[in-house]
Length: 261
Image 1 (tube, rainbow, N blue to C red):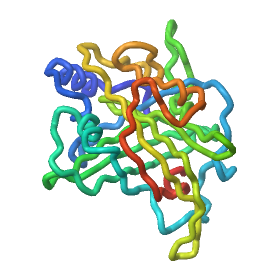
Image 2 (image 1 turned 60 degrees about the horizontal axis):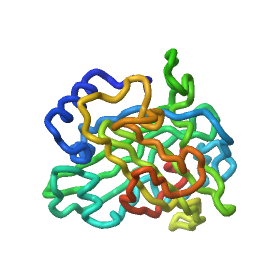
Image 3 (image 1 turned 120 degrees about the horizontal axis):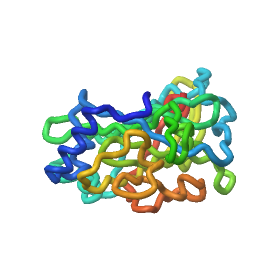
Image 4 (image 1 turned 30 degrees about the vertical axis):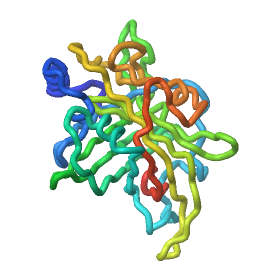
């Protein structure tokens, strides 16, 4: 992924801001027309290895009864409506979360995407949030030059347990993926493996006539409508993002080796 937003995206963001359309509404795009965006991060702090001590590569020992997609349970319909935005939901069904990440430069940081999809009135909607695998472009006067874009997306320890928090964004807002539980499961094929459970938090960008910087992504933006930073994710101090993020829902049953390649 490159380090800049493309021109059509910036034009689209400006157009939507001028029309006053809610950002969450546009995160949910009809399947097949998703917009993926790079994200960025600051290269500081201790970066631990993955919870199994590996590089995150599937060695063939993971569970075959689970995949990188699982049922997602919203906190409530009001929160799901707030996430989607100005288009009211009718009767959303088959709500799914999909996690597709890979390690960057053997650093313990993970880039990739987190997708949320559902079916409503016969249409399938999907919002895809991404974290880039590259490094920030270097520009005089800007912070975090040459930092890995996915530097905050790491496993760490809380109370002796391996947990994960990380930032992802699309052009309408940011999400924080939280994995707070790993369990070892057997399956019908006898393979066994680690299964992840967790939560997803969201923060829609404020409406603005200005476009997001083409040189930095939302957690490298320190002020203004496109700031999606969260201190607890940056400092790995808590599993609750704060800083304006709201809990969207929970999931369980994600295969660790399928989600973290």
